[in-house]
Amino acid sequence: MIEVVCGDITALEVDAIVNAANNSLLGGGGVDGAIHRAAGPQLLTFNRTLGGCKTGKAKISPGFRLPARYVISTVGPVWHGGEQGEPELLRSCYVNSLELALANNVCSIAFPGISTGVYGYPKDQAAVIAIRAMQAYTDRFKKIIACCFSEADAALYREVLQEHS
Ligand code: APR
Image (cartoon, rainbow, N blue to C red; front, side, top):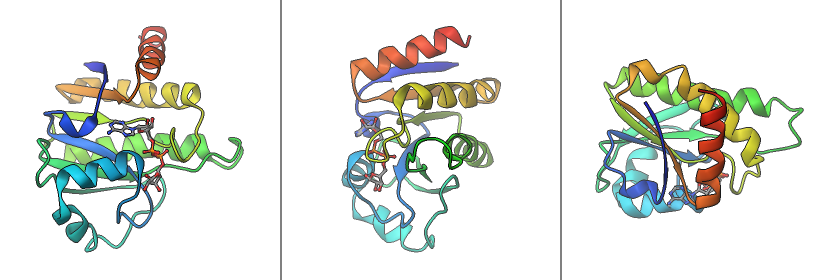
């Protein structure tokens, strides 16, 4: 089932949380910064061994000090108006993260709004891509969480979920 929550993804007690990372996987601001702070320095040390991550792809690491067992880092597209493959790349982030989670026996997974912060992806368009991708996997996970960082974002995701159920 898909659940929309509002809060800090680093606090969620799920098998895996997804990080909206950059291509280096070496940390940054936003949710990337929050996850690295909460996981501790071992996440950076581990990610250094991964050799980066292409936009739209996903890589997995232990959760270290996080409640979550795994961090699945994915790199969303930077928004350039929507004509440069951004929708397909954003969808790939969700699908590749979900597939990687399945391959690691993850039963519960939480996503932030990938690309909707620094990368500038319009939240309403991103929410439709996110919910549609999650819905294709609901029968293979115990729980898929869309973790929003504001009540406004949560209301948007709930509305999209309602429209697409
Ligand atoms: N928990 C849940 N969601 C969060 C948190 C948090 N602790 N902190 C931020 N967010 C939300 C933001 O409000 C936004 O909706 O995560 C969403 C993604 O925003 P960003 O973190 O800015 O990620 P993104 O837009 O994908 O940009 C990625 O930012 O931090 C850098 O290294 C990162 O270069 C990469 C870029």
